Amino acid sequence: MTNEQVEKFLETQPAKPVPVLISFKSRNSFSGLFIKTSDFAELKTKNFWRIVPEANIDNYNNTSDNSLARIYNGSEFTRLSENKSKKAKS
Image (cartoon, rainbow, N blue to C red):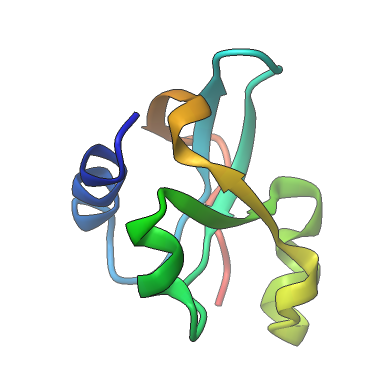
């Protein structure tokens, strides 16, 4: 996916971040939370995205520790969809 496609999807999401099901070309799909940090704009222009994996979302919501996130290349995404099974808490 291009950075424009990812950004368009994120714009349709509620203001409160929710987990997203992310499908990849060459790895298994997983749910994660896209987060906006101080370098969000710079990463976005390069089609990189900071994502907290679902296993770390509760921890992230309690601590806001950005080190719980990993950076993924948006060109490896094949599809993004709302994960209706679990919502993030804030």
